[in-house]
Image (cartoon, rainbow, N blue to C red):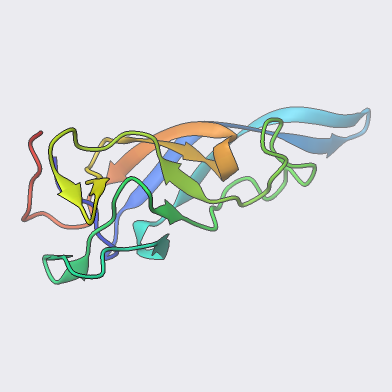
Amino acid sequence: MFAVTTNAGRIGGELDVCGTPSAGGTTPVVYANTTSPAQGRPKAQKLLVAGMPALHQNSSCGPSAGNEQGVAGGVVSGEVKGAASFSTGSGKVMIEGSPAVRLNDAAVLNGGNGAGRVLEPSQGKVMILS
């Protein structure tokens, strides 16, 4: 899978349940939630992949978008537009001491409220196969 950098790409999922105002009070509604690796912090200080800083499992990306109508916040996190963090990474390739993050690695969205993945690659040259 391709290494994730701060160049481009998309992290997303469709299981972000947030409290949303309705006529009968607050109702839990499922939202699709996305963010971009371009917003990732911390990023690698000494490693560039295709000319851009690489991200690792300790990086988070945010704010996210897609759940703005859920103003009562996520049912787990209580956040709206919370950051995404990576829950899986390479088992063998480390970037500055943390597992490298790749296309299709799992992520948690909106401050831990929903599940997702790295859906679109940041670059198409460097692959991490482990």
